[in-house]
Length: 401
Image: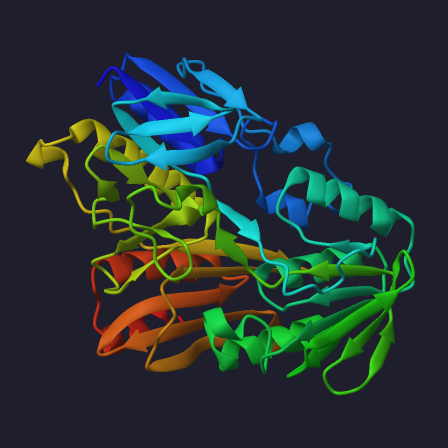
């Protein structure tokens, strides 16, 4: 290969670019990015940067001095011809020998909720974070967070730390229930209520009202809330609109369908939030929207691209996913793949102790571990999942010592 493009100046894109150079690629390397920034870290956007604890430059990721690349930030790619490996950006078409797709995801905005009203935010980019932070500094009377997933829960935690009244509206029976199940969701609901969050479960936002700025939220149960700031935290969608008619296969959510090695078609790989691939450890093909996965999959995809037709380099990508979330005085960590699962069991601690470990079973195998303020359980859990440890043995090893 003489010319490679990385589409997406994201964490996954940066790691792919680094790995290409580390693995010996000496040809021309071009990195395209929709945003005007060099790659940056997204986890602090809902925590340290939003709270005003960090300056903006703290989230910028260091560029390895070995990454000799043409960085085209603020230049989104608008079209791909996968068969010919031609990218179009800024009205110019260019041909490449290899392409890494790492365009990440965009925040969802349900229907026309809050359209035209100021004070209504999503949180995905640095600009999103700075705009929301400015509204929070104005000491709003109430912040409404729509969605009780990881981002919504972290924003609620940050707002409470700033001394702001917060209501979280979640349509399901508990926060993070879709990812972690009702038992853990119930435990986390208690954590939020103990810290003063007004948690409205089994409820949705029917309408946002106001003049130029949002003033009220009408909920599905008929109640209304006076609000000054609204954060829509209802999930993301892969940023793949530019791949229409590309020749690649996209799944129902818009993810780039890859084989178990991260290859989409010959000469094109995908990594990070955008990639759908079958992980042998867990079966069904899926996307993984985690920081740790972006790093590891970016590296793997780069190596797979350079391997080409060499069977020795066509290795399956089969990580044990890991994600963390800082909320109030708690560090929540999950390793493995909790959904779907056949059984959940709390094997140590409890929410009253602000420390617990829970395990998830699929068939007769441990598939995930969740831990609150218990990092050693996560280290042990990763090892047991990687080793396909039977359920009974895993519960003993992860139980109280």
